Amino acid sequence: MKVLHLTSGKLSGGAAKGALRLHKGLLDIGVDSHLCGYNNTQEKIENLIEWSFFDKIKYSLNRKKNTFDLKHYKHKSDEIFSVGNDLFNCFKHIDFSHYDIVNLHWVNYSLNIRFIEYLKSQTKVVWTLRDMWPFTGGCHYSLNCIGYKEVCGDCPKLNSNTETDISNSLLLKKQWAFKDINFIAISNWLKSEALSSTILNNSSIDTIYNSVDVSKFNIINDQNTINNIKKIFGIETSKKIIITGAQDVMDIYKGPDFVREFIKLHANDFYFIIFGQNAEILTKGLNLENIKLVGFQDEPSLAKLYNIADYFLMCSVQEGFGKTIVESLACGTPVITLSGGAPEELILATDGGFIWDGESKLDLTSPKTPEKLRLNAKNKFSLETIAKLYKSKYSQITSA
Image (cartoon, rainbow, N blue to C red; front, side):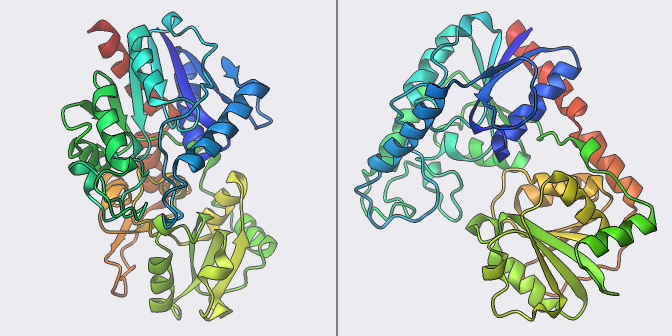
C-alpha cells in the first residue's frame, strides 16, 4: 500500500506536525508512506517530497490572493478565513495515480477546491479533519455561529450583513466538490460537528485521534532534577504549580478570558507558569506575585515544565483535539479543561484530570497517579497506536 500525505505550510506548524507524526508512525509499522510539504526543520525526513522554491512562492501568493478575495469585507474579524480559491497548486508536479491513497491534511493556500475534485478522479482520497474548514463557509472554527448547519451567509466573521456573501457561495461549492471523500476526524466532537453540517452530513466520517510522540514527553521522578529545572526557570515557591499556555495565549480560541478567571479564582492557592506569546497582555492587571511568564518554549523545555507542574490548565473554547493535553498526561501531570468539546473528551477518555465549569472554584483534591496517566496517554495516542488505526482504515478503503 502506497500512501501520500499532503499538507500546507511549514512542517513545524501545528497541523503539519500532525501529518508528519502520522507519516513517521506509518513508516515505523511498514507502510510505504510519503509526505509532501515545506520542510523548514533541520530534520531529515524519510520519503519526503519537499516543496521547491517555487512551491513556497506559490503558497505565499495564494495567501495574498485570499486576502484580496476578502478585501470587500472591510469590517471582518481578525480570525482566519480561507476562501479556497487559490491560483497556484503546490502539488502540481506529483503523479497521484502512483498512490493507492492520498491523505489530505490542512491544505489551505496550497491547492484549490477544483483540484480536490480532480484528485478524486486519480486515486482514493482520505481527508483528515484537523479543524472545521472543510465543512464551513470559510471559517476554521465557528465559535457560536451555526451557519454551516444550514447555508452560511450573513457571516459574523466577515460582518457581511448579506445572505449571499462569499461564505454562502463557498459552502455551496464545497457541497458538490467534497462528495466521495473518506473523512477522518481527530476527535468525536469534530466528527459530530461535521455530521451536523450541510456539506458533510451524508459523508463517511471516522474518528481517529491525533498521534503524539510520547517518547519526547516522560515522567521525571528524580527530585534533584526537578529542583534543577525550577532553578533554571527561576521558580521559587512552596505552592502547588499550575502550568498553562499556547503558541499565542491571547488567541480567542484558547479562551484567554477563562484563563484569567481561573487565575483570579485560585490566585492564593497556586503558583502559575504561563508559556507562549502575549502572556504580558493576558496577565495585565493580575497580581504577578504568584505568576511566572516563560515565553515560547520548545518541546524539550515543555516536557520539563509539565514535570515540575502539579496540573496543566487548558481553557480552549473550541479545539479539534488538544495535543498539549496528551503531552501533559505523558509526563504524568493531570489536566484541567473546560466542559464541552474535544478537550473534555480527551480527559474523559483517559481519566486524565478535571473538568471546570468556567465559573466556580475547582476542587482539585482527587489524586491522579502519574504512571497511570502516562500509560493511558501512550495506549490511546502513541504514533504506533494511531498509525495502526490509519493502516486499517486505508485497507478498508482500497479493498472496497
